[in-house]
Length: 342
Image 1 (tube, rainbow, N blue to C red):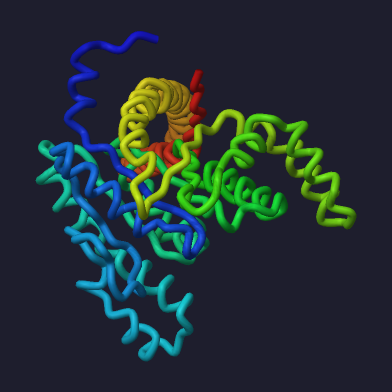
Image 2: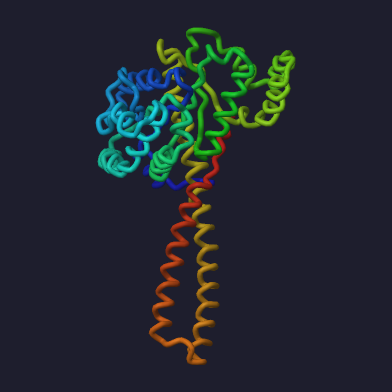
């Protein structure tokens, strides 16, 4: 499907939003700092959001920082919570005022190139919470969004750990319905050739898993076969956030992913919205026709007065407006996206 030139120009004005997601200690914050340095070197204007209320020191300057508005320690004390509960509560409190963050970004998005978002170290707090969904969906409605799932190569030497990481990235993809890029971080510590082989050659990975002579090994083999198509479709890059190995390649790669997002994701979303509204319009007219017939019958028999008829009609129209709104919200949650790289 070809896109009009005016649409492509409009796309170029929108900043690319990057979410940095990964297990604790995988190098998310360090990677945000590295990408920020590279973007500054390339003279790309970018905004950084820090969503981790428990971080003490960050190596980059955050334009919007959750710690400026929410005191993590105070939340723990006031609500009698542990560290994870306090992080989740802080993120929920922050998301209630997220419209203010959107307003700030909206005033600057005409001259921004990138928006970098650093998420909490506890991965499940952001990916599976209501606040995480609110934040990701708020951005995906207005901007092209890409998720960076960061894998610590040094901790993924064991094949079972690798399967766990791939499975988690798969669950994030289906939860958010947004494009995802696997980042094999800490390539300066150990070689990533074995991970590339596991990602590209299912037989080689199956041979490694067959050496695991217990239940977890056979279970991991079954999972590996199930997600084989998934990790062959998802692009990946090796990088070292600390030393900067491969970081410029990552930025170059973003252009291709951003274009794929716009062509595939946005176009399919618009087609789906049009189809949804068309079907919804037919359903609304059908329901209205049935309701009007019932009301006319009641009026003819003197059961319903005309004034009641008007009030019922207005209530019906309000109902359909609410129904249309719910349908569009449902559509936003049903977005499906696949990256097809050659």
